[in-house]
Length: 404
Image 1 (cartoon, helix red, strand yellow):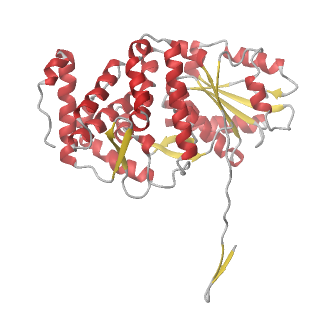
Image 2 (cartoon, one colour):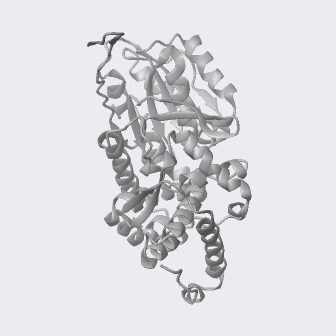
Image 3 (cartoon, helix red, strand yellow):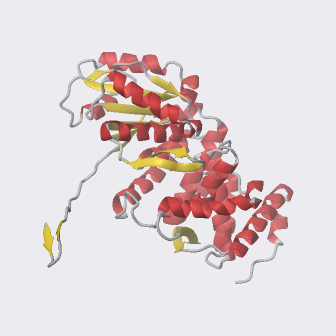
């Protein structure tokens, strides 16, 4: 399309690019009898055999030392369609994967050494942070090679692994370097969840609580009903949580009209402005889900004190966080540096500050400023709540309600 005025001429490029990627649920992904992986690699790819590079979370490898051999046996079984030019690359998981740029360099070097092209596959197997880092490496090699994510944590399977974002940390800021690049596919293998620590098992529940709070009151109620089963590590209860949470994240990405976040609205980042700052302030010793839980508690309390949310919904939210064993308060909330998280969050989003708070369970409300006085009172109230938790919730009932 060409536009002309008396003084200038412009050429306008307008096009749409449709994206499609499946999120599959399976067991024992690399068992030779399971064709899901080979069918995923072969779909729409005429190149045979297809070169595939595997990147494995070292923490996962510690619990599943048989995994590289299982991958090798699987590739051998389907050797006419699948080629593994290099052994799997083992890289440290957790936030350390995103904090050290040499990990990205190692993946880039392996992609080069293996001779991968844009029709080849990088397969990232591990927790959310490892997936973020490997996805960033894939998005920046040859301007983007195909990525298959195999999340192995609750948080990875219900949130981090099913989205379109890839990133690493830099300059002391969370996700400073990154790219929007949808995966070719996401393959959730529930067998990997069995070796998670209790801490990592619980941590991923925070993202389910988050998305339930802003999108689905029925899902929130189901989490309340299944609390005992989730805490007892009932795999069927967790599988149901992961599937519904992943479904809502994917629906939001596909249906909200802004999958690459060019606008300022970020409802899925409810509770995250302080969570990202808390991770940084604690030297990333805090799990992402734990930080999100505290962020949810803070933003829910702020919503209550600001008159957006009624007391019953506020108490239900904090009670659920506590019931599944997630933190609701940290002393770092009192540090003046916490407020820097608002500026960093606004900078990361672009445009004016836009935060999602809570109007009722299942419905968010966007605001464009935070009252420091109300925020300070919210932190004080959370600290009181945390103290009362050890003395019995009945003492908390006696605390006065805020003015409306």
